[in-house]
Image 1 (tube, rainbow, N blue to C red):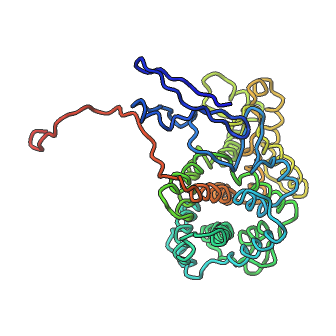
Image 2: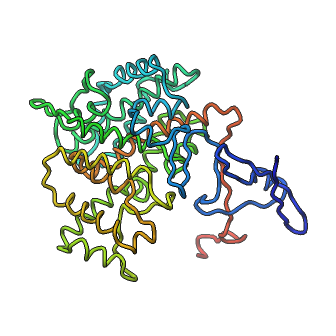
Image 3: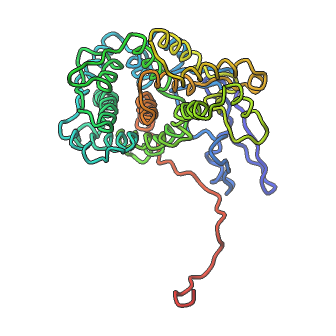
Length: 428
């Protein structure tokens, strides 16, 4: 049964179709609004605007639901790997054993950087932010295999996706090594995806770092939980750039830049900065929480609550369990992690936060996990980007595969000066 929405403007009535998604989400299709009425809609920040139809990720913020291609995030976290999840997100189905083996081989084949790319790192100052390096290097590496830029079939797309997903961890680790003045470490063919990244991050020529299963599992979960998250700022940026016909690498490099913003990818950084502030201030956790609740307080409880999830963030439950298991197997003496545990306990029992549904979110636990792994603070957003690459590729693919796709071109409501004349320089 079809539904319509009637809009009355200037004494005239216009009917617009109501469309329904597969999860019963309803939307008013105003694609023809301007052509039919001369009006546009105004929605600052696109909070009520569906910018596209997508079959990748479903979120129900009220119910705390997150699904990739229809599969609950809880099932993927319990049963899948990041590589398998990446395939699912991009291709829309779980890989067969043959698919997994072929994709694994492509990841291994493409994990090395071109040797000429290594010299690019020397052009950055030692204090360059790893996100700046990551964005630049994703664009740079596309120059070394121009034949893969024109994606004409799924075989080329699979190779391009594997190349980007594999090399992004090599670039990320190399950017860290350059920042601390250590030699770049080559990847190993006998390590899985997460173990290999940790090896490239923390090994040195005379001592190999060997990650424990708990650390590798926690990183694997971190990447799975960040693989996609519907039309967030960076993903929308990737789709915007892709709609112009830009290649996959340029589009994903733009996603890195959008993610770099502290309001998007920097939330787990803010969590650790908050913990450091509490430690340096000498306040105990109860006092800090009390100050957060005070009227007109400038202090904030970072890592609690979520713009989309109005009840709980399903990813936070998964990472909490992983962080508990990881820390139990590590002999870490870190006052910031102690403060985090105390903060979690106080906030979860305080009626103020319970009534407002300010539960620990994924950023709270990911900040704890990354710090415990030894990942430096300026690499946190890079880790987020590594996990989000499959989602960016999948959204780029949706644009690329749609024969009706056209360049994105939002409208605006002009509020500037009305018509006025140019004033000659001698009269200004």
